[in-house]
Each structure stands twice: as structure tokens, then as C-alpha cells.
Length: 380
Image (tube, rainbow, N blue to C red; front, side, top):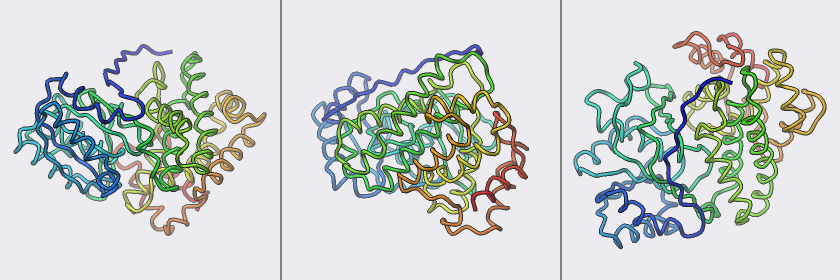
């Protein structure tokens, strides 16, 4: 196990009606003015926005409201959020939505305290030294951005991420009842995404990390058990509670403590959804992950066998990968990249782009662009 320095200061308000208490929590943080940011109209139609606004009004917090964040969010829209935040001199950004909305607020929050272009954070290694505080009301459990130090944004045909403790939300509301109206495809893709966040940390060559690995295995098994239940009943509160916990903890850094993380699958999928923003992140991961597992299976046989036995409940590695694929089919996820309408020319472009900045991606096995293309083609 490697040395680590870990602190997660995000306050979690978890459970029924907790979003109605957000105003009180923000007031305790000396927040007097916020910009509420959301995506499409579902947060308005469901009454979530009005309930949040009422909680702010009850404690005298002034607010502005701004909608329009899309899936696979853009730097362009984040710049608009930043401008409103700066012009209005808000004390915090309040994201009401999923990872796309939260990440948009993270970019805007850091940009508001930086004189240059926010793209510098992603392409030039500029450190984020300050940011407007961020709070969120989660409406789509998937990305785990409600507790994480990470953010991802699209710009100029690229989908890039970066990280900083300065953008970890100060308060996150996780009310499973807000997930009841999610469509089937978002539920399924969200479950796949949170499992992948754990995989990116679980598949490591760092030895003697049994404590964290055991908890990661339990979290993945829980997601695999609860996912199908939610497809059967979108209003299964107890199942949503478990999934919400898995999603939040999957990406808050805990499952990567003391070890080298991988992140190749996310890098490969980011290229696909940057090439075609209509591709849902979780759906792309469902196709790529089994192919990646087969490609790297010989690198660390002991780790792969542990995955098969302790996560998937099989005796062999290939059996474990096949069982994972069966789970993805149960969640009605695609099996081939061709199902997204991609062609071989797109695969070549994405493979080259994946390794263009760093030469290789991943740590479990360092992948070249040839490796990436081979993985893509194996599930085309």
C-alpha cells in the first residue's frame, strides 16, 4: 500500500425531503446569495427547483436561476455560468442535477477565480488554487461528482478531465425520492458508470490493499444486485438508497486509497462521447469494459481471478467477464460500438486521440493507440 493523504469534507444530507433543508445548511456556511444551475426541464416539472428555492427563501438567501446544461456539458456553457456568477457576485453555485450540471458548476466555480481560460486547467496543467463554493442537489446518481474532486468538460472535440480539492462540493443533498422519475436508460447507464468508477481503482497492481479492495467488491456486488430491481420498479426507495450510496462513494476517492489507479476505460469512452456527444457515457462503458478486461487479463492474473471469484462469483476469469456482460445485457445496455452508429474511421480517430496528449493511457496496463484500437475493434 502507498502513502495517502485523504480528507472528504463534503456534508451529505441523505434521505427523504432533505433538499428542503438545504437553505438551513447553506446559511450555516455563511452563504447569502447563490446561482442555481440545472439542466433540462425535469427539475422544474418535478418541483425540485421550487422546493429548493423555498428552502433558500425561508432563511433569506438570495438566488438566481439558470437552466440549459446538456449531457456531455460544454466549456461554452460553463463560461456563461461563470459570467452570471461573477456579475451577480454570488457566494456559491448550487447545482440541481447529475454529473453534467455539477461538473459545469465546478468549471465555472474555478474559472470565476482565474483570469485565464478554464481550458488551461485541462490542457496546460494549471492548478486550481481557488473556487467559488459549490453545493448540489443530486437528481441522477451516476457520476459521483457530488462528492468528488474531479470534473469533466467538452471543448473543441475533446472531452477532458482534471481534479482539485478546491472543487469538491461543500454540501450535497442525496434524496433517493428525486430519482423515481428517471427513465430506464438513465438508471441503467448510471449504475454502469458508478461500477466503472470502482473498477478504475480496483484494477491495480499495488499490493496489500485488501481492506479497500474488500469494500470495493461489496459495493460492486450491491450495484449488480440493486440495478435490475430498479429497472423493475423505478420507485423502490430502499434499492435507490443502496445505489445512491454506491454512486457517491464510488467516486469520492475512498476506493483508491493507497494504490495506483487505472482510468483507461474512462479515457477510451471519453473519446467516443467527445466524437459523438449523443453517446451516453455509461452505455459506452458497458461496451468497452469487458473488452478491456480481456485485453489486460494476463497482466495480473491474481487480481483478475480475485475479481472473478469475489465480485462475480465465478471460478474462472473468462466466466467472470462473461457474467459481467450478462449483467450489462440485463440492464439493457448495448454490446457493440456499431450500435452507436460509429464506423471504423471513427474508431481510428478516437484511438489516436486517446493517446495523443500522453502517449499511453491507463496504469494497470499502459495502453498505446494500437491497444486502444484493438479494444475498440474487438467490440465493434
